[in-house]
Image (cartoon, rainbow, N blue to C red; front, side, top):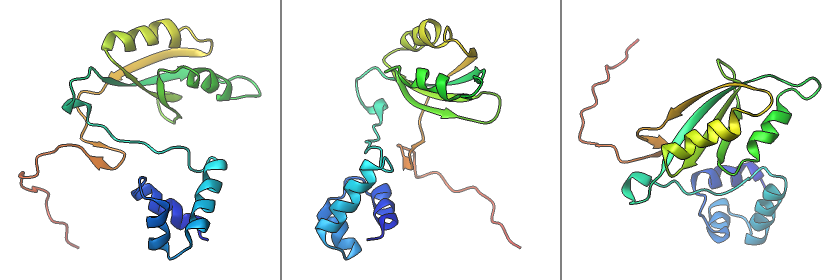
Length: 163
């Protein structure tokens, strides 16, 4: 069984049943189930997520990205501070990046005050954190490959490219 084909399909259709995956791949359901379970156990598949357009709900929801400047530790690099940051339940995603910040963190909260309190009381005081820059998401146009509600009646004003 080609596990890469299973990964490709699940990245496009995370809700696909094992039966559907087996039909598409032309494989036995037991083989697909075994491959999927193996990928999950190896932490190659780390979860299945739903993209929610919070603007269409009556629920308070704030997303923010936080750039974090940090100092690496001798012998551990950035891993130890990343482990400390990732333990916070408020942290949705955490990335080691190049550029002006060592880390980029995504946080989901109910209010801007919750984000500010998290940064001021938990994140900024951490040993190894030099500075933070908080950016609040004002509007989402596309999330994880899914286009949010964008008006489609707008003319495509891109210029044609010719050689």
